[in-house]
Length: 447
Ligand SMILES: *Cc1c(COP(=O)(O)O)cnc(C)c1O
Image (cartoon, rainbow, N blue to C red):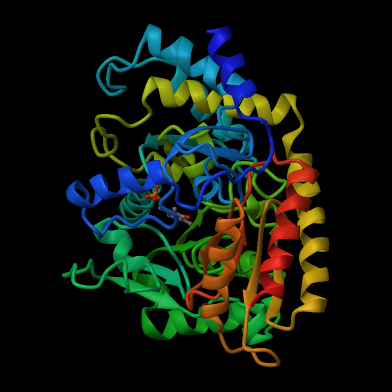
């Protein structure tokens, strides 16, 4: 076991290295096979096929090494093949891989629920149900809120992203590509204006007033089971809401018997320098959804929240065959332990200061960068037509393509496709960040 660990870490030096065209010949060969057996609905942002990874570096089958600024969309938050996670998984997989928690339970699930109760915002009794994916957590959060309130309505915000299942498709802001042609969509979903300071210029109080009055007029609190909100919107483009916005919505929800749900699937689990991003805003949600970063790359997701809300569901109403798989639970326990024992919350703050400083400097050189925003290891730049707030998706595409050719994996985002998001693992060094920023500087210069 130790051998395997040493080999992975040693065989992936933390440096960028481009040794073939991107994608290289071996990647191209696999890609051709893929096109015959995988439908185009499943895309590949960068068709280099990855063989192994460690820390913040991906190694493809041609031997190219990429600085990973995406972490599998915020999944390998504490770094690829983190030694402690690998060890925990190896040990667990040899001991027990499945019983089904609702048949014959095991301790790992209980331990993950304890850790979530301890680290999610709010000082009250909590319960957690474990599932397999973010969308499944969203679906369960809505079910739990409906059962508790006896109401049907689901409120979401403009620019939201919540998944690709039937209910969550209806909750996304963007129909294309997520929902186009996949109807009928779930009903009783209502979308309200959000807080998007770069575009709306509203204070938190003003934006909250607009959201609330919209919900009161178009649905009415009496018919709303829940309001589901990402504390920092992910796919929408890393919008950090104005101060006071989220607590004002929570206050309105509490006063009106609406369950407010934090979709922390992208922003949560130590990514922003806090366990959960809601903390930055003084927001204590009723329910918290976690997934992506929770288990170091293994599939796991959770709904965690107030005991009285969670306990309203009847026995048998919640669960699923693979939910809270023992191996995923072992990985999640190791992730929590690494965050705590290695002080990883501080790493989020370190990455924020390096990225924000570097990107702000680029903004002063390149007027195409309209906004630099985000918290912790969740930073974005919004590209515009210089001098305006009009989206510039073409520039985003060029920058990401240029960076990929140089060995930097940079993800795009934004309702209008005009956002570059920096979502590295907390294991990324200042040197790798500086190297990546240098490449991005070159990319802007070449625009
Ligand atoms: C990724 C994501 C989801 C969906 O998670 P899946 O695991 O892909 O189903 C939901 N909400 C947010 C905020 C996300 O970023």
